[in-house]
Length: 392
Image (cartoon, rainbow, N blue to C red; front, side, top):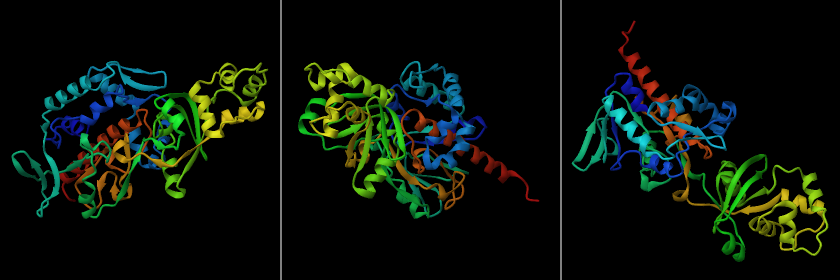
C-alpha cells in the first residue's frame, strides 16, 4: 500500500519481497472470504485496537473503512456487507484483487523484486539483501519496512527482523499469540464427542471485558471469533495467575427473567437434555458444556438453572502457540517511533503488523495494515519534500 501511494506521487519505488511470490498472507486471508474491514460505527471501530487506539486512530481517520472499500472497488472488486457487519469482496477471495493490485503497481512503475530477503544494513548503511543471484546492497532515499509480525512463518512473517532493529536501538516487545485459541481441560467424553462443534451467538465475559459472537469447541480447548474479541485479557490473566476464568452466556439475548420463566415449566419425566432443548433451545453441545462448567448434576431449581445458563465458567489454562495464531501481539513499540519513523534509524519507516498493536478478527487487522501503509508513505513524501526545500 505504501508503494502504491509513493508511486502515484511520482516516486521511484522498489518492493523487495523475500518469498517467491507476492501477497501470500493476503491470499491466506482470502481463504476465509477476505474480510477487508468492518462497517460498524467508526468510534466503536477504533476502540477495537485497545491500548494502541490513540496512536492508530489518526491513521485510521486518514484511511477509513470507506476509503478501503472505495480502493477495492476501484480495482474492480465490488464489496458487500455481511450479516455480522463485516465487509467482503463479492468474489469472496483475494486472488482477483491481488492480481489487479499488482498490475496497478507495475503500471505506476513500481519494481517488484521477489526472493529478496532483507538481512539488515551493511557497515556503510546500505540495505542488505540475499537473493538467488547472491548478495545485493541498495541505498534508497527512504526505506519502509513492512515485515509482518511473527505468526504464519511459512507465509513469510517470522519475526526474524526483531534482533536487527533491536541492534539499532529500537525497542521490540516480545511476540505473543493473538487471535488464537486457548487450552481447556475438557473431560475426555466431551472432547471426543464435541470437538469441532460450534457455539453460536454466545456472550463471553472476563472481568470487565465482554464479547459476543460464535466460538468453536476444539480438542485442545476453545477458539473462534468471540474468543478472539476478548483481546489480550485472557492472555494477560494466564500470564499473571496461570489461568483465566471466562463466563459463557449461552442465551445472551434472553433476559434471565424470561429464561427462568421458561425453565419453570413441568418436566413431566423428561431428561435434562430434552427439557433444556425444549425450554431453552439448548443444543447437545451447549447442555454438555453446562455440565463441564457446573458439574454433571445441573441445578434443578429454575432460578439457579437460568443463572447457570447465563454464566457458565470455563477455565482457560494456556494459549495456543504463536505458530497457530492468526496474528501476533508484540513487536516494535510505538515509543520507538516518531510517527512511523524509527527514532533509532532516521529515514527508516515502518508499517503493518510489525508494530506493537493487536485487534480481533473482523476486518480490523487488514484495515490497520492498509492505514499504516498509507501513513508511512505520507511521512516519506513529507520528509522528501522537506529535504528539497532550501535552508533559510
